[in-house]
Length: 290
Length: 66
Image (cartoon, rainbow over all chains, first blue to last red; front, side, top):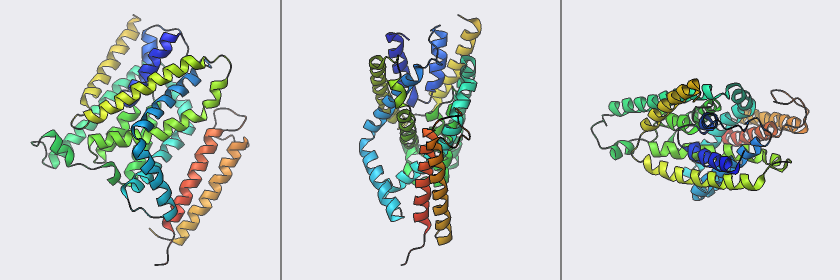
């Protein structure tokens, strides 16, 4: 992998990790469309991905630093006391509940599923599925808005009728966490399915995005930290990879800020249409071998 | 739901998870792993987290004197 390719992949990973468009799908499809020759099965590619993920997790930690301090404090307080009394304490326990199914499925099945489906054709197909899922989540949300007689109200007012992340049930948190496993299929977006799950659980769009980003942080961070020893394997261009990771972190931070603002009144639809169109276009280009 | 029986159940579950975490960490247990030798850090961390979660659940479910 050349330096330019590493920087491009860093930027791509950081930008697409939090947008509901599947970073894994893009990182499988785009190098293939550009006829880049580096192999993702190369021993030095795992440390590269590790650093990119650590860059993304670092960006999320910086973005939510105040909340993470409150959540960490709330976690220990509630765990020792055996009772939840504040919002951060409840959020801490919801995040633990959501992380457990994701952790179990990730540890036992992630590598197997990713290796089974790591083909650009499959990724493009799943990208179309991801688009359909996002559009489906929004259809279900519109139905909920109609049931609550909110369709004639302004978007900001519609959103205010839905809930904050701290108020969802523990069962809903566990289900949203389990939804993350769908993202092992390249093309299915982790943030897309968790934001969609949050919408189904009755969260506002912005709150669903916040819960999705908070839920992603420990999983991405833990997965990255466990693989850190691989960085010290011979032949790994650490400096180049670190620069790519910094780019990935910067892009993730900017995209998270954008998305949180966008979801004040925005919907998942544009990302759904993008995924469906990009998936179909990629399938066409791959078939034509252009 | 408050019940000392449930709390004891979670406590026992936590002990089981700690043992499984140790076995994965030492490389003794090889069930559902990608390689068939060596320690499995990811699996060990997962079961350690499950043990902590079980202990928290035990603390949440135990009955308290009012």
